Amino acid sequence: MAPVTRWLVVGPYPPERGTGAEAARAFVEARLRAGDHVHVVSPRPTAAHQHADLASFRGLRVLRDVAKAQRADGIWLRVEPGIVLSPGTDRRRGLAERAALVLWLRRFRERIFDVGDVGLLPGGRAGRPVLAAATRFVAHRAADAEALVLHGADPARVQRATDGEPAPAPTQEGAAPATTQAVAYPPADLVRDLPAEREAIEAAVRARAQQLEVARDAGG
Image 1 (cartoon, helix red, strand yellow):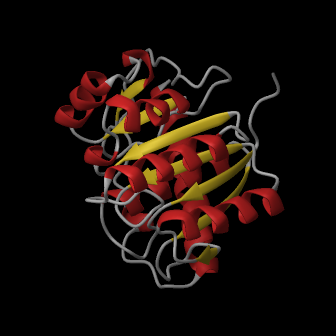
Image 2: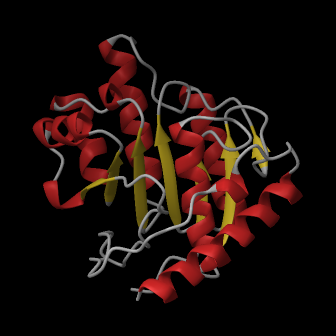
């Protein structure tokens, strides 16, 4: 199977703050360094390529059209309220949202879920098809990783995020590559407190990617 080279990244994005925005930035940074094409869609105005209301079925329709236009073959999706899946909804709507999401995800060869709200990924009839659809989960807390496995996610597909490092590059099987030596990465000062212009964000991301590459070479 050919490697994924065109990514749709869906989630909060700088200059918005928080775990989701930082995780999206790190992933975009890593993919740009690898030479991939990346298109970012955020649920609020940010330095992403575009923003839109991503809630429920309306959001799924937006993302479907964007993925088709961008010819995306991989997706990085932040799991949090307001991005397709709705918290506190009735069982029938919850099943419908998750069935529609699973159907749409089939178009991608790589499907990475960055887990912000693990409660949106329950087990049972509603949640397990979504858990089976992801090729990789990135959990930022040990409790979330444990909950994913408890709900039925394949433990081999659940990865713990590491602060200060970009997400490991995806593989054709969807698993993160093993690392043999820890690298002392410099702090991410280049990508903090950026102005709300996409050009400035992209320039900072590329500079940070080069900084990380130098650190890897020095540590290797």
